Image (tube, rainbow, N blue to C red; front, side, top):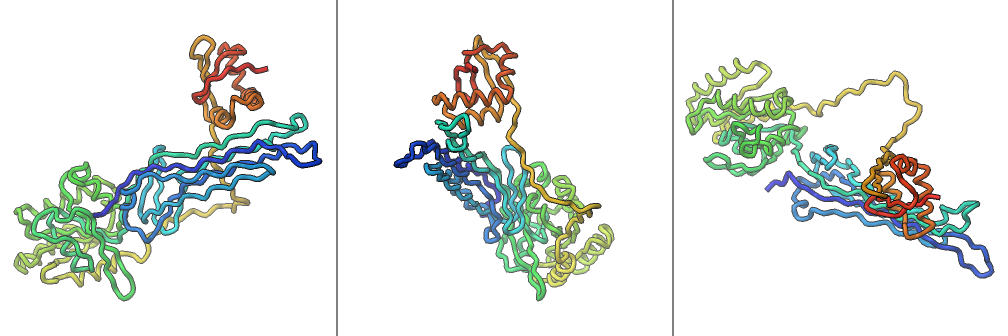
Length: 429
């Protein structure tokens, strides 16, 4: 069974805590602070691995957690950074996070960081200054990012075989390649895409048998969305059309049904190069098959190759293989990047900084709530039971403008302030 969907939870490692330490050496009366910094937590990284073919491993394990970094120690020993947690995924996987950001990994070796590790806390040595020579505070490490990820595999195939159920796609794939799909005389024998390799002396093509589409597939009928997703990456579509449908339906109507569902799912599919394989020619007279091929060639135009095939007798299969190798280019077209008028003098990488905005709200008599990523990170780093740490936090709140914003809302010294779920009495001096 092909597993092409998975949902996993990732959690990056937390940063290590900074150390509160002082030198203690014989005959050194003024050793001073020597607490080291905590290390950086491990990132969670998804890596494209060409040895994988589906998402089956994620059905057995859904939670992935990177290790926390080491804490700082005395004698200015900094904590070790935690190594990244690398998760292998097959080529063609799309990753979507809770924030809606989409990553698409198609080439072996591609990497994307989906959860960044927490920053390490600073040791008390970092807080030493000419006016504060013996700081008794150190920062805590921050927690790593976490969240759910939706993984969706879209097969990387050169050619896709599409058509109604029981049109003969599986039999055609079995004769063209060494694939062994299930073949039977009833519809929906193929319940998942099957890949096969068409080989020549110079190159190979990956051919995908896309399970039978039905009317309404683009709107989710049957397993339409699951099937159509695997057609999106193909470079050539072969529409397999039954010359003698078992239900007596009209081949022209069947052709129109499948083409309409492809176009409704993605307009790009309607523009992909096409071939038409008229299958099961052994069930109709030879003259009737030739007339049908002529009608379809006239109807579809010269850009769409029309071949009469029979998986039972092998009719037209060699010619179909030659046409597939001829029509699929050696390399996928690469979008042209416009040249810059002037070369860049230097390259810089910019990452979004933590939000510095905040919001102050009165929640009751003598009670206030402060919200904002920056102030919440500040509270998470410090132990408010430590008087020196509390004084440091109050000073930072002053410089950030939080105290002034509180006073504008009617704050008075000694009122309760809640930040990040922590309520404390604020009495700025």
